[in-house]
Length: 197
Figure (cartoon, rainbow, N blue to C red):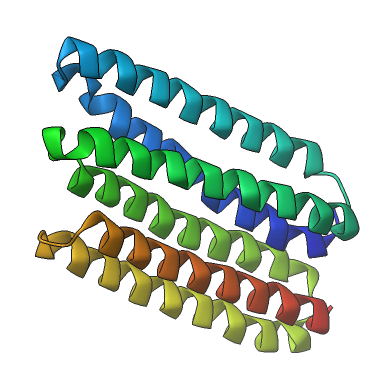
């Protein structure tokens, strides 16, 4: 697989991990809802699962594609991701207060984000074995920076989780900020890899 595609795979994998975390958090508390609310919640979760499955299928289809195909597919995947997030917000708005589920959902998604940061850094570090020793030094600096950024994002997300009084809007804004930082760090690391190789 071309190394230029790794950025896109990390990007998509991070979002799949968040989707899985959100589904897990939402499904785990559905039984606590009233029967009428539970039926509506289960329908919304089923829709979320379909969106997640379609996103995963798209990711798997693109996994062996080149950078140009990924660039084209990413626009649709970004739209699918945004729709998934909108449905999670709808779920939290409709059922989250009844379950006090906002915090648990945030914590699971934040955990998935931090794991995605660490997994991406490990994949990028593993790719550095392809580089000559003199080029690896430059690349290692980008990987170290990604790990530092991951630790900073984790600390910020943990601080919000412990605060407890934040609105869902504030929590999702923090997740979006962390996700954007991940994308930037991921891109910087792969750009450094391309320059070094």
